[in-house]
Image (cartoon, rainbow, N blue to C red; front, side):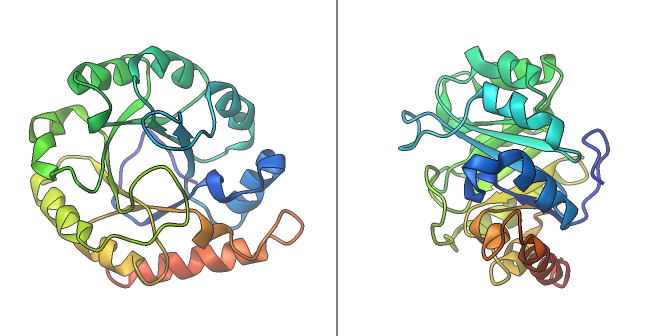
Length: 233
């Protein structure tokens, strides 16, 4: 079981509930955790920063009792700051904001930590990793988007692998997770793990073929991603 207060660079698989059955979030989370999920990833979209609308703090609060591992909340919203306390109060262990979502990301990261959550920073595919060099000591996680944010099921953008490698060198021995979000499957997992990533968000690749009534495919999917990643890490 994962502990948000501990740190290690072992491979962690974080299924995204964006690919789960929306009518059965509680049961889906319990099923996918029982099948080997390390974290639960919640993609929050506002229809403004990204072209889709998903969940808010009320959903996070409702599913929190079902999550035994780590609630990893990815805010694809702008502005971010007015909503930090609500997501922290809903039980988020990690709250990740986008570098591109506002002009005062330093303040946003301070606010996330001030609210009692671990601070994450996400970068879109077109954003150079060097843009966050002065923020490294303020983050607990960096999320490299390997698709353009806003929709699940997109194809992996291979140019981001070099960005991951550059980020890993920048981090050095700091206790910062490198998370990958977008197009992760057994084919792409070895690429990002070899470059230095340790948290792999998987949506359709984790949930495909299974259901609450038949959760075994979740375990098969997670195991395949983990095996592929660990073989390259």
